[in-house]
Length: 397
Figure 1 (tube, rainbow, N blue to C red):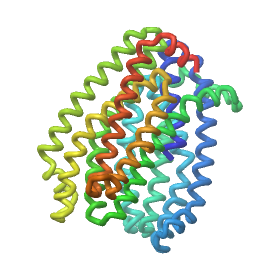
Figure 2: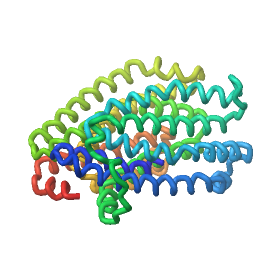
Figure 3: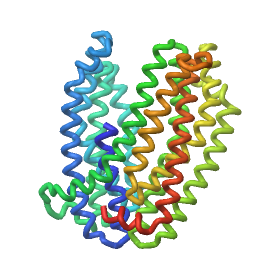
């Protein structure tokens, strides 16, 4: 899902630069081609989801769990076209500088999501009792609700000016390839990052249940604190894109720098809070003493990890505003899969002169790998933001 919908994130910097340049009339044609990509992505995603049972069987999951998981995904499948199109239109809104409508949509469907999940899982309020599969149908309904609400947003003046839906354009191979040139690296970067954490989760499970529980708690807190830097990076990308489109490269560089410095201060504060209140935070998740002790220790790793993870998120987001997405993808590939994962495995299972570190080894490997990613992406941002020739070349994509 992240791989395929991540491709449509290319619409945000594309639209931002066109908006900044005052070329609103060029937004519609590019977005229409982005929607063709979304339709193809939805079809491919549905094909993958409806043929997932063999994957569960391959991993040795028990038949009962495999059956529920398969039927859950088949239920979610009904909402895939809606959510993929919604993501494409959401990125268009954000590229135009209107980030509030998607936020309102997300907030308004949250109560409906909670209600439908409860009703369909437990069979309340006259709904059938579907158990875990009910979550899938609830999610599918919410996806269509999001697209329906977005249909009202696209009728607003700021969106109508793009004339996205004023006509129907057939697929244009040249334009689609231009979008893919920016979007595929974004989707692959998201895929590489998320799949790495999935693989590490499986590997931690081989060590023991306590380690997996502690790892899950630490990971959950890490993602919770990562939300702000991630969205700040997206905001920086929009501002950078609009200033680049307007030809104000100094303002674009200043926006990226302000976001980066703000994020660094945020990371320092969050790191301090994670260390000071680590026992209270992990206590929300469990009452098992062994799990709590290990999870609290892992939060020290998370505190250090914050500094590099948050800064690379903002730097990556700002680079997207310049349409500079290929090199960050390469940095992530090397940092995560060539350094973090092998080093984490070696440290965790004692394949080094040192004693086996268990789950701590994985987080040590992640921190070292991401440190290199953060340094290289930050340097790339510094170079790109001051290189007018590179900016002009990227703007033509």
